Amino acid sequence: MATDYDTPRTADLEDSEQSLEALKARRADAAADLGDDADPFETELGLPGADLSGEELTVRVLPRQADEFTCTSCYLVHHRSQLHDARRMVCRDCAA
Figure 1 (tube, rainbow, N blue to C red):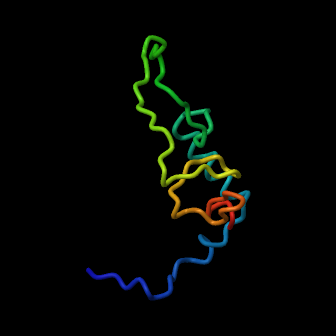
Figure 2: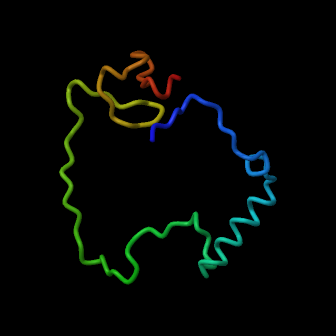
Figure 3: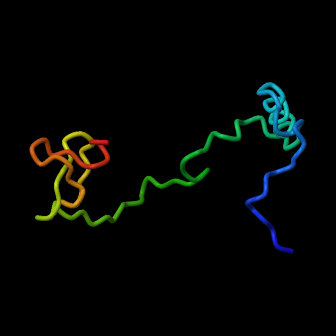
């Protein structure tokens, strides 16, 4: 069946105009149903129970190339095509 995405949605106004408190209560109920007391938006970095102290990172770091510059605002290395102000050495992202 084809769906016309240009047509306006006709969902119930009750569903689309819920208060913030109602949405928080629904999220709390959903978390209680899962039996998880932890915040669902918190993420744990790393592997649980994994001892990575003996591991060594092997990353090849290249020096800045002739066609690159280091932005004086964000300190990232960019290609010369991203240079916005040659006097201040600022990239396009920081100048915006």
